[in-house]
Amino acid sequence: MAGEAEKWVLMVTAQTPTNIAVIKYWGKRDENLILPVNDSISVTLDPEHLCTTTTVAASPSFDSDRMWLNGKEISLSGDRYQNCLREIRARAGDVEDEGKGVKIAKKDWEKLHLHIASYNNFPTAAGLASSAAGLACLVFALAKLMNVKDDQSKLSAIARQGSGSACRSLYGGFVKWVMGKDDDGKDSLAVQLADEKHWDDLVIIIAVVSSSQKETSSTTGMRETVETSLLLKHRAKEVVPKRTLQMEEAIKNRDFASFAQLTCADSNQFHAVCLDTSPPIFYMNDTSHSIKLWNLALMKQLFSRIISIVEKWNRSEETPQVAYTFDAGPNAVMFARNRKAATLLLQRLLFYFPPSSAADLDSYILGDKSILKDAGVQGINDVEGLPPPPEIKGNIPLKKCKGDVSYFICTRPGRGPVLLSDKSQVLLNPETGLPK
Ligand SMILES: Nc1ncnc2c1ncn2[C@@H]1O[C@H](COP(=O)(O)OP(=O)(O)OP(=O)(O)O)[C@@H](O)[C@H]1O
Ligand SMILES: C[C@@](O)(CCOP(=O)(O)OP(=O)(O)O)CC(=O)O
Image (cartoon, rainbow, N blue to C red; front, side, top):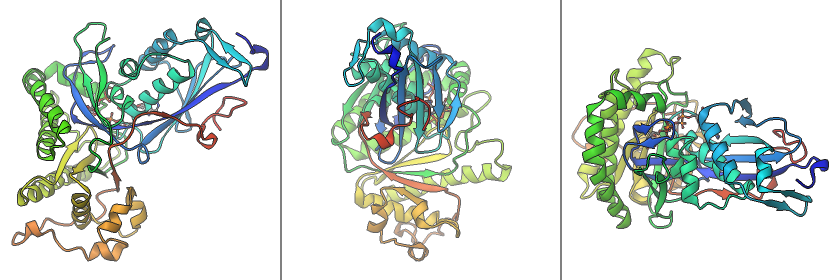
């Protein structure tokens, strides 16, 4: 290894998006390799609004592999991190940095230790797919640092071993995780169905209900489902194979009516499967122990409200305007068919879920705030002046739920992982390799 005496630090910084599944992954056939019981399909979310940034560094001066997540040191000893590190190291290539006078031969990577710093610009472990963006970013950044020649699909099979849904974050746009058949998992990987420009009039609005960490992890939850739910067997064998093909068609043809119907149906079946688990999993209303009991009821009420608002509105139009999907946390994700529908959706959401009096609108609507302007909402007064949606005319409107939503994020389908060259985004000190 040339350049050892200088104690150089070589590093790479990458940014990777999260993704939201529209055909859900729930259940593994192999826990160690993370092989799923069915295919899944997701939409990659714009990293401008939700993303992970990770800096990875190698240096002969590092004594061990270390990682900092959101500024705090975390252990890398878990199997999932170790599997990813081992797989990437095994594929490392020769690296030369002429500027630094550094030459690393393929075999040297086994001896070099790594420092990793990562930052999620959204709540971690709250059901917003931090593990997906985080593990995808780790694998992507390490592959670049170590000059791994494998294509994105092969990298996705490594990220999959860190967290299943992470494999889908290796691509932008619309992504399918092909479950594969092989016992060694080599054919269980992500493929891109279409890039983010293919269907760029879709608008995604996320209602973040609680940023607290969830009680049942996805990993434990799906293990219990596999062990106890008969409905899951039916879903994996009969429902998802057909639904996946229909969803691929809907995406290919930008057919929002089919996309919406399939997305809502699959989210509802995922939660039905959770409920069919023994003991049942209540993802839509089960949050951290610190949440008081009355809040559990509130969560349940909130999600049934979102479903009710969307269903009522869709039924009043000739064709669906919005789809909803709920993952394993207290957040609701809604897809609007275009900007016009997103504007009308935001007006409805603000009508039913106005911010608490203390909150200002600027911190209540995050991401693409321009939709607020289109909705004619510039301040709290405009929110208070919003009329009830026309579809409830003649009926008693649902009660307003002030302060029930922490904030909304307006976003869109986004691009896949990229390398960052802007020095201000680097998370490790270039001299010491320690967090800045
Ligand atoms: N940026 C990151 N880099 C590496 N690992 C991360 C990163 N962010 C999160 N993780 C890992 O993922 C774990 C959280 O995963 P978990 O599945 O519990 O939540 P989530 O991914 O936010 O929610 P969900 O998968 O249900 O959408 C963290 O405890 C950490 O181990
Ligand atoms: C409900 C889901 O979000 C489940 C995500 O599960 P994870 O990928 O977090 O689980 P592990 O593979 O055990 O890490 C649905 C989905 O993203 O497809």
